[in-house]
Structures are given as structure tokens and as C-alpha cells.
Length: 138
Image (cartoon, rainbow, N blue to C red; front, side, top):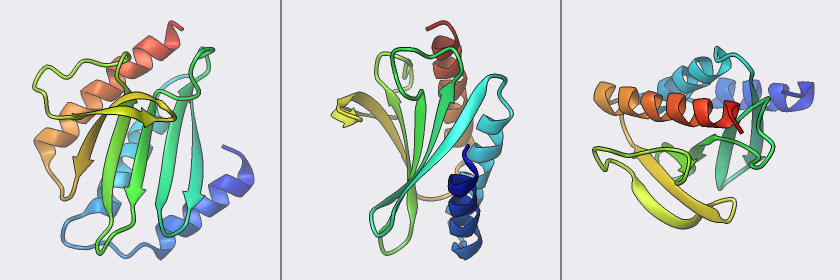
């Protein structure tokens, strides 16, 4: 991640007051989870008042610009939407929502997280692993 974007991300995190729903903690968890993957680079796109996006791309990717986007949605309370290209993951338990054109104009499967949920977080991590493996073979 470029230094300026890294600073923006760190400032965003520092200014974010977590609530009992632990969405800041979930965001930090996914940031760490993705940053520890070999060959993965993170980017941060800030659209104040709308979304703050953590985007992961694998060094081998040539066709798509990312393999997962972790969006922080601005609302009364912040919540997360974790989106994948629909052709990069499976959703065997159908926990995600199919969103036509929902990820940079392509079909997506998105998982909304409004509060800490161990089972959902593990399920999304499995999807991250799956998308990362696919991106590494691209």
C-alpha cells in the first residue's frame, strides 16, 4: 500500500470509535488476516460519508483489480460489507447476497456484517482463502 493511503487508513482506524457491535474490531481482524497472505497487497479507498474500502489484490492477478473488498458503510452505526466477484467464490451455505454489477460493475456476492459473529467471520475467511487461491492462479 502506498504510504499516503496507509496513513489515511491508519487515521481512519484511529478516529473510529468502536461500539458493542465490534465492527472496528472485525475490520482490523480482516485487515490482519489479508495482510498475512503471501503475495497479497492491500489498498485503501476513502469516500468519506459513503464508504471506506480495504481492497486486496494478489500479485499474480492480471484480469481483475482485486479479489475481495471489505467496505465500511457509513450509517447511523458503521457496518461492513465484504464483497467478492461472484465467479471467484462459492457460497455453499448461501449466506451472501448476489448483487448484479455490485463489485466494480461485475456481479458480486456480498456478506453484510452488523455485529461480531464468529461463525460468519470464519465463513468469510474461507471465502477469502478461496478467492485468494483463484487470484494467485490468474
